[in-house]
Length: 389
Ligand code: NZQ
Ligand code: ZN
Image 1 (cartoon, rainbow, N blue to C red):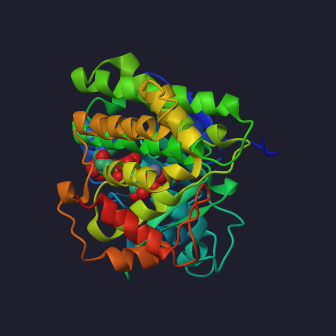
Image 2 (spheres, rainbow, N blue to C red):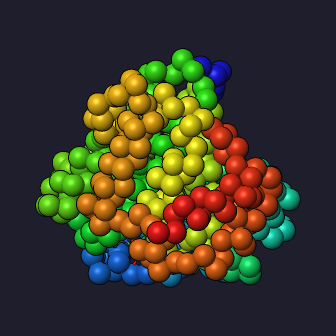
């Protein structure tokens, strides 16, 4: 097990009606003038918008609104948000929505206190030294951005979807009310589950030995996500299933499952190329890429993959043919994705091979990706080919 330091400063406020605490929480973190940031309008349809405004008013918190965050959030709106923050002396950013809104808020937060262009942080030309504080009301369990160190933004100029990480951008607090997720369309629910599972896989497939405790946490988390998502599809207002799924989404990506391990992240980099160019849901892209990444790399550590097949998918281990055990595990993963309504091939989302070369080059623009197995441009190209049909 590697040495590690783990701090997660995000205050989690979990449960029914907790969004009514929003005004008080912002006040307790010193917020007086807030940028209220949200997406394409689901919060207006559900009435959440009105409840937020009410709580802000009750706590004498002034606000400026910026809605319109699109899934795979865009740099241009981030720039608009930064201008608004500077113009109105904003001292706190409130993100109400999913990963896209939260990521956009985080990017606005670092850009608002920086003289140069915010994209500098994503290209590595600037380092995050401070940010406006960000608070979250989460409406979809998926990206884990509510307690993560990352933000992922798409630059429309060239369709680069890049991320930047810093412990400084973890939100100050995240309000998680599972009831707010009842209105999610099934497709968003399953894309969220796929993203959570991928966040665990990125940590599970490691070359680090002696990490049995976090191995088992990873396996239990994935099994539980798979169980809960099926329950939620049957009964979208099953509170406990929604609640478990929501908490799993946070724990899958708040860093705890990666403690003492070296994480991989190649599949995420590969997927970001797909959602950058084709604007598909991140979780759908991961359901396509991950099983094919597995097929491409499993020989690197067949024992770990046999463990994956056995512990997560109950495959009987064939000690004389571990390869068959592994391939059965990958097949069951694909079948699970199909069963809950996710695509597992590029063909399923009408993506052909026309951009494979460009995407493979972009994914490896800073050199080989991944750490479990290092992948170069040709490897990424081959994984796209495997994922085609
Ligand atoms: O925009 P609105 O109208 O709110 O609709 C959203 C959006 O269309 C809808 N939605 C959300 N909550 C709802 C709801 N509809 C009905 N009822 C509700 N309660 O869901 C759609 C998707 O929202 P989005 O925020 O895009 O989803 P998600 O949370 O999956 O975020 C995806 C983004 O996060 C990035 C992804 O790359 C992608 O851009 N990620 C961020 C990470 C991080 N910062 O740590 C890590 C992840 O690996 C990921 O890369
Ligand atoms: Zn993800």
